[in-house]
Image (cartoon, rainbow, N blue to C red; front, side, top):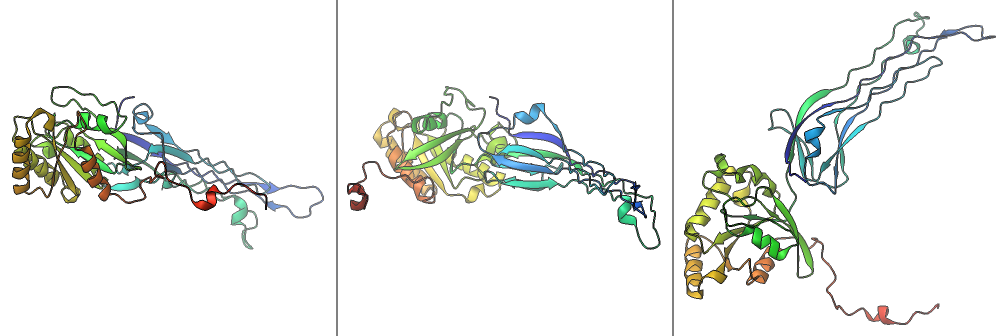
Length: 352
């Protein structure tokens, strides 16, 4: 399935149905009179966040959404049927923006929540509602109120607890493959990752979602490379893991400063998020070099450095322990395996 995180669509709520002009004509009824019913209300445009979707690819092929209009009123004071609401299902984390692509109209962050964006038009009044002591036989009626319409942009921001950042070829895909069931592409060239990857990490009987975005290069916040487009996917993360390639030609301190500068230039609070510096690919160098670069990174501002190997898994436990410290305990805490049951649970069953 192709990944699409932005889409432009047209939406229109239903128009209200027209009111009816009708007069009673009943046998054995001495006085007749107006009995035209009101029109029905038009359908609303509703957005719903659902599970099972992680892309906006469906909106590439269907771009116009129109709710049903209300039914017309009828004689015998019958109100027209209301138009059916149109529910547009989007992935969790989708933002609905105005046509200016800046004003956020809706932010769908909770599964199952429905939010009305456009309200359907009210139905027109039938002639029975115009009856008064001075207007016994009204013939006017309301045509029904028009619905609302607009173009909106859908922008998907993946919901993840932790995010991976770093220069191209820092080993992010290998890292996420090591600790999750994700099958991210790995290659010895820049921008192997072309779209964000999500994986579920299980560690210490807890679970959290990890997001991997394409590598950042200098000037990414201004549009260089492809990582700037996907920085929005880590805006909701609670902690960022900054992978630095110790085996790269780029000095680790310089690599850290480049990424830190791009996060600050992008804004949206990314530079304020907790960051864990992970010195990757330590299996390719000797221990003395690891110690030297770790010292340099700490002198350059890193509070703590975690030497790891994404290929062998060395040092992963310490890094993942640090990630869990930044996450709430409610992130899918499971019962430890082999836990002894309570004494009351071990008693044999008895009908008494």
